[in-house]
Length: 297
Image (cartoon, rainbow, N blue to C red; front, side, top):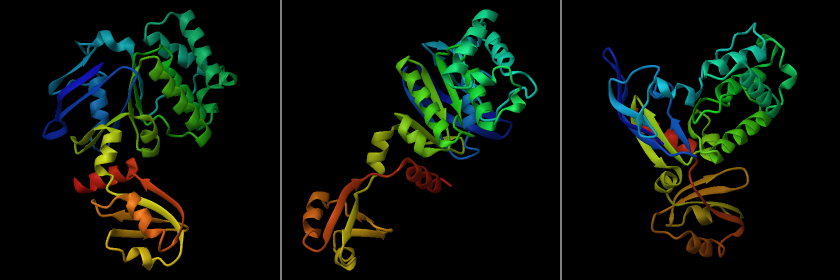
């Protein structure tokens, strides 16, 4: 378990991270989210023990994060850093050796992961000869080749097409069944929404909102329904139960007053229009993200 308590990091007169706290249990993916400049990377670097916090504590399995945890951590940075004119297998063997793997183990693990991610044919190619997406795969392998217990992924889907995004997403999800503790930092809210059980949304170094994603969506959900119907819009739009009515190509999203039951509303409108589809909708993480950040700017 990773526990961060009251983490603060100052750079001269700038507070990059301000009194941040969160806990991540093994086998869970934790979303660390926020706009550019929110303090996410600084937070990750303190967890990695690359920089020291000004105050606060960071512990893993009940012990303070220190150099002894170096070989237990895997890190995929947002700014990728592969040696462009080195061969793929040499790069992977080198990164594995930095995590205390023997040469034979490093080569075995590297080849194993190259096969899993369908890039074995590039084993002896130079990094510069690979497409951007395949370079991203090699960078990912470098982060996981030593089988880390704590995995920190900063924008892991950048540069991938939809097929490879899906492949990488499924790979990350398999790590949860292995009991790994995972921090996911990304701007791709749709993927974060599918993968993270708990999130922390930060802005200007401070927490804006944190907790179970399902609970956050419930709190910010409002009372919204999606309706596909044929008939006059004004027959529904003018109803006293309706706060807001948004029409799209072949459906409408309707924000009801808090006290209005969606099922009772459905019974009312089927007497006015021909309803083809009706469902209760919840806000996307992307909408929650935008609304909360706008409120805090």
